[in-house]
Image (tube, rainbow, N blue to C red; front, side, top):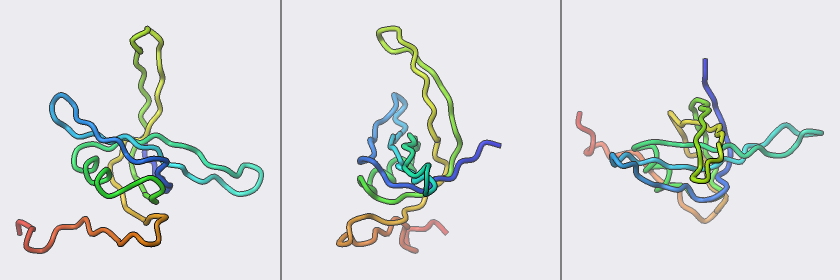
Length: 120
C-alpha cells in the first residue's frame, strides 16, 4: 500500500503550469514538523497536484498556509540537459484540505459551489 498523509505549511506559493495536452499541474513544498525533542525540526516534502486540484490549490493558497494532503509517494529519475541524472521523490496529491493561513486578517475562502451550480 502506498498512501501518504501530510499536514504542513507551504514554503512558497504553488507554481502552476500546463502540460502540452493542457493538463494543469501544480508543484509545491510542504514544511512538515517532526517530533519534538532530539529530532525536532521540519521535513520539506515536494508535492505535485494535477488538473482541478492543481488549479484550486494554486488559486486559494499562498506561502505559509496550512494544508493537508493525501496521496502517494512517487520515485522517478530523469536526465538534465547536461546529462546529469536526477532522482526525485515526491508526493502525488489525490486529495487535499485547506486548514488555514498564518494571516489572521485573511477571510476564509469558500471553494465549494453554490447549490444552484450543482447539476443535480
